[in-house]
Image 1 (cartoon, rainbow, N blue to C red):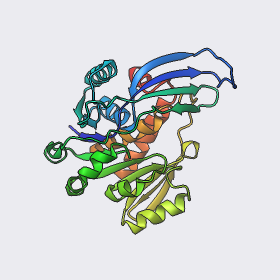
Image 2: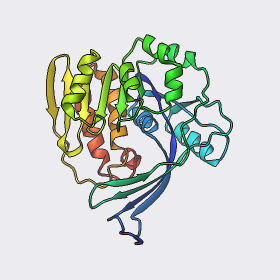
Image 3: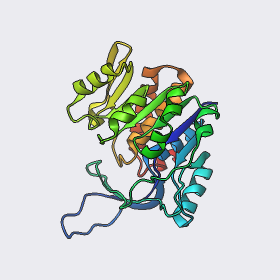
Length: 283
């Protein structure tokens, strides 16, 4: 069975699906609501486990409380093993607010007010001895990643980077990656600039997801594009996270980079026909 470790921040999402965003001082009725664990690494791990893999999540949980209880219980139900890497008794899981529109397939996210956990545990064995086929990093839990950079470099399997928007520390994460799969806003200068970054770092496999414009990929000198799946979008929340979780599972199962990108494209596209990040799994 495929095994993967996902490293990244966990949050609790308060979600609402609406037909259209209300204007200033306006109100609207939700089509659906939920309170559900989220975060790019968490969603990817849940997707990986749903597809039949053995998933572990390294994330900061911190102090006991209702959100921690809800998150750990949910992940247990989803067959994801959780490793709490926080060493800060005052750390609280961030609370995010997400409003998605059915009419536009767009969303608005208000991230939690707290900062990332800076006090992290030593978890060398977590990375080196669990027999993972790959590791995914997502530009969060950067203090943990920095503390274990040498162990990550020594990891024998591929390290997948989930690159959303560009951050001050993005170059450090990119240098650790064997296969970066980034969004089109990861590199503000565009596709060519990102391709040049990868060439300078001798990264032979990479992909850029571009929403409705599909996916551009590069594989050891070969290049190509994958068109976006044509679906009636209900909610695109978490589609990128689901894409990464599906890619990781398919890549370990097939060994083919391009095939895995195609499989992930299909699964992420279909997830957009359902509200939230989980209902596609339960449909």
